[in-house]
Length: 276
Image 1 (cartoon, rainbow, N blue to C red):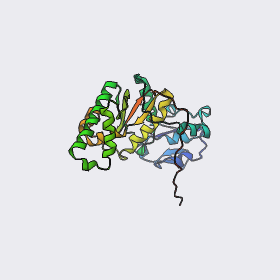
Image 2 (image 1 turned 135 degrees about the vertical axis):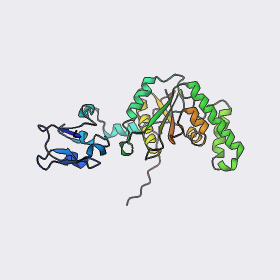
Image 3 (image 1 turned 120 degrees about the vertical axis):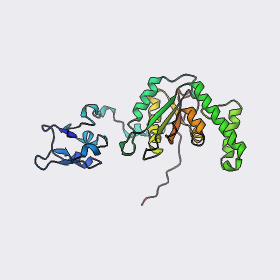
Image 4 (image 1 turned 90 degrees about the vertical axis):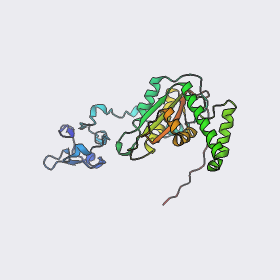
């Protein structure tokens, strides 16, 4: 079976699909000039769908990524520069949440959007653990606090650079504040197996997509850095969260309904750029 199906009534033989293919497995036929896959091309295709998406004439379909599952880009949904700037600048880390559970279907929508995030070789190895139970999330935070207490008591010298930082969070926890997972009603972990070629990058990029999509669902997120440190160093906590042993790449994120709204776009330092 050929990898490509060409509508000869629409194809202009412009070769755009040939140029765009990241694996160079498309060529123009010697006899008729229409695009075709190279011998064995179906085995090398990474399912990126670029050949289908880049054709201006809707003339090409890929049997692994058929044109029917590739909706057209609608101009009415395109955003301008000011809209994109405000959208990105308005991203906030949410550390105060409403005491309200997050609907599973909203989490499902966020994860569905995140599967379109870039990933190495389009291998699509990112998987998810969702802890959508406030009591379970609090239990994980409690285990993290115990982990902090243990490492500070066992050998403070090992964490001398961060001891003050950790002591601050532990003191807040002991005073009754959830300084670790902020009383978030849900915890989401993006993860990838050991065989993943890009390590932590694919899960992190997927979470970045999820974070940007969350406000559309009325939700807010916060990267759980302290939780991540605990997971990296404590097999017990990784097990409590639900990350399998052969999944060494992961990062957790808090999720919930923001308690407060933001009305301004805080400034940041100017970028430091080396032009070469």
